[in-house]
Length: 309
Ligand SMILES: [Zn+2]
Image (cartoon, rainbow, N blue to C red; front, side, top):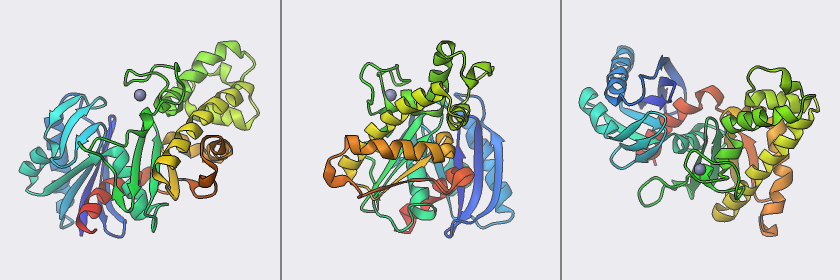
């Protein structure tokens, strides 16, 4: 079976043809049309599909999409990144292409990708977190993707880890996303830099999250204080997920996970503060193995999970 897999991002659309072994046989990347123009995205996808169909017999389309997704109808209820409201993505693309289309929230696609082709192979209980522009989360329990009543559950990034903490994009205060997304780490470092003129970060025009990790490796004080705060937040959240779902594996992906050599040990040392003793030693925290291809493989896994299990 060959799936046309779509990783629909706010900046780029990445597409690929993926077989059930997880091999990417064909790949393209294009710029996402301007926000609020879903029909342009649909015609872009249809065009890319036709290109792929010159070489491959495609069975289904799987799409990982940011935002709240009605997964049964393939409806994008609301996507802040794309500025789409109640857009029937599956129906529109299916009409254009004649193929069945399955849509899932991108973080749910990520955890499915880890289960089918990544660190979570052979695991039935996985929690996955992506630390990118925001913090996304996905949960697989007993091999089933946990999505809740309307399919929009498992918003793990909006667990509050610092009451009265910084305001989050969702309107609440102190969410994991407001502390530990790549964007938040960069923002918090930028706010701190004035107080730490000796920091190696103070000379930079624009601070990115990876600069903070690089500074940490050099023993920078600002980076140490900030990453202690960030990893306390992550550990608090991970402790809660461990107690809710009893996962065997927790996978970190997204930009921050590229610095897992620093990130994971700092989180691991703090999680015991936030879980009941009976959970100690029952789970592992690992870095995503899928890296650049996590989005495309995750999108393909949406189809494999529905058709092959
Ligand atoms: Zn939030």
